[in-house]
Image (cartoon, rainbow, N blue to C red; front, side, top):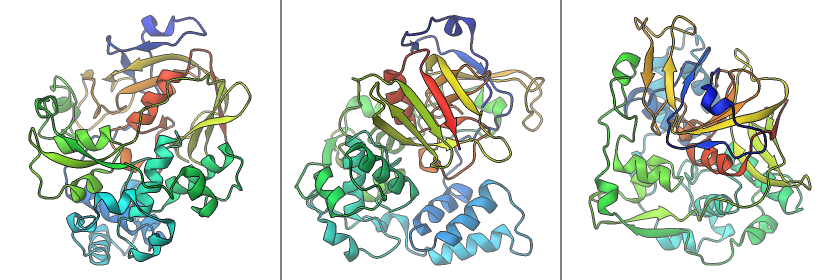
Length: 402
C-alpha cells in the first residue's frame, strides 16, 4: 500500500520506538483498493463457506476464492453457480459447527482425538494447538479450529524456534513441546462487563467512501466482533461456541485465553517472506523469535524488493482518500479522510517503511490474511501488527524475500 506519512512522524530519529498513539496520523494511498467490511451475507458468507471447505476440498477453496476475491473470469461457470455449489457442499449451519465443543473438550484435548472430528468441522485439538502457538508468539492467524496453511506455517516456525524437525506437521514431538498433553485453561469463561457493552458499535461499515468518511470512528460492528478480535478468534467460531447467549453485562461466555503479547526482547531484523506469506522477526543472535501470517502484495501489485528500514509507527491512523493522486472509487472525486478504528482500511496500526509509500499494517478482515491479495502492502491481523509495533524501533531492517 502506498502511503505518505506526516512530517511529524517521519522526522523521528533512527533507534527510537516511533509509536504515535494519540495523533491519529493521516496516510495517503497510491494504489490501495481497501476492503471495507462486507455485510454478513453475500461474499462474506461465501468466504466463511470457502474457509470451512479448505481442509476437505482445497481445490474448490482455491478456485472459488480466486474467482470471487480476485475477480477472475470463470467463463461458463458463473459465480451464482459457484455460490450454489459451495452452499450445497457446506450445507450444515455455521452455528452448529462448534455447538457441541465444550471447554473441557479443548482444554483436555489429546492429539489422538483429532481424527474423531469429521472433516469440515472445527476440531478441539486444532483449537488447542492454535491457542498454544499464539501463546508462544507464533501466530496461526485467527483461531478457528481448522487445519490449513496458516497453521502449517506457524508449526514450521515453532519447530525452527525450538530446534525440532521442520515439516509443519502437528506430530507428537511438537505437541509435547507445546505442552499439548497437559490439561490447561485455554478455552476459558469470561464475564461480559459494562465497558464491553457500552462501546459505540456501528450498525454497518459503508462500502461507499463518502458515507464511510461521515463516521466519527470506524469501530467494531458488534460486541461479538470486538470480543472475537480481542481473543484472536474467528468470529464464526466465537458465535458458535456462544450460540444462544445474550451478549449483555454479566453473561458468561467462552473465549480463547491467548495470554499476553510479547513486550520484551530486541528485534534486530525482519523478513517479509513472500513465498511463506509470513513476517518473521529475528533477534540479535539471528534467532527466529516471532512469526505472523501475512498478505504480502500480489502479482498485479508486488511488494518492494530488497531491504528497507522502519521509519515510523502510527497507532490508530486515519485513512486519506485522494482520487486526484490515487485511485477513484465510484463517483467519489473529492478528498476524504476516513476516521481511525479497527475497521479502518489499514486496521489500527501502520508501520512505515523507508521505501516510499509502503508499510506493514493491520486489517479489518483478520480471517482473510493470506487468503486474499494486497496491493503491495504487508497486511497482518490487528493484534499481530500491534505486537510487532511495540517491539520494533526505527531503523530496523525489513528485508523482502521471494
